[in-house]
Length: 386
Image (cartoon, rainbow, N blue to C red):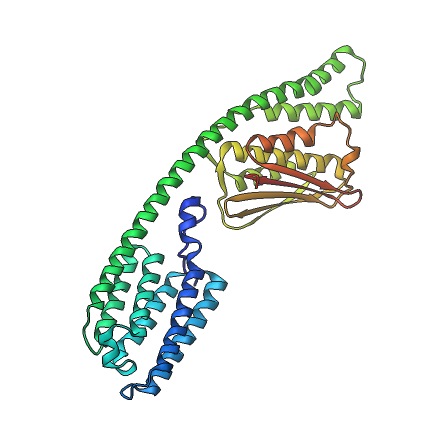
């Protein structure tokens, strides 16, 4: 069983909220390790005869073991709520034993390592949890300090004040982060709408060029009677013209709608059969939802890449791999076919440049084509660019 990360969900949180949460894990590790080291040093320097050295060694050793375990888990899996709750419980247990670890005089002076340990534990809880989960842990830590201290001092009020102040500061930081992220999202929506309109106009120009270069050319050849209708060249040209017509059909994309990228790619793979078998694989969880213009651009670019495999690679199998990391979606279309040298592609061959590279650029993405003769081809699509 895995527990949810305390750091916010990257697919939903914006950059401002991420900036508040992401550095917390390592800071907690540094705080806990430093606190335990200070407690160990303070205990070693204390020569009060009323303190149990055996209990001191056991408790400080337990705190050191917990700090090592916390460090390992945070570095491996990130900071989770069970780790924060565990830290509160371990520190609370140590605080409840203060009467055996710290002298009565030191408690009255409010200069003990127990004071520092309680303060750092409160800071860890308040900076890493929401109020609903953090308040019970705060009560636990303060209650353990009160129960274990051999004398009641003003530091109890200081602990309560610390918890209230840190909680209020974190609430303000989170609220400000959400507001900033909403402003960023609104800016991104405006930019996406502008990109969609630019993409629509560019696609219309591209379709007119394609219709002129393919559909009208085929009609001219047939109408003039200069080419026999059963020639292989005319059949290939007619098939390409049909592809152009099918691409131009359908309603214009809308920035406000989302589409499932995996569903589009799997539907595309089905249309390539039986001439080309396409394996579609996702590194991550479904669905991969994207704004409709972006999803259609990626599927369209992948379609052109697979058409090139079917026409030129001399293979019957290709692979499509989808990756999603930290808000970036990448799609790789690969084959082990004949390959080619990019430098030798004629300038009038616009499939890669217009149908792949320019199509991705119009929605804020990028495309890269790499190939070598006899070594296959890889088309890498990425959104957003960088």
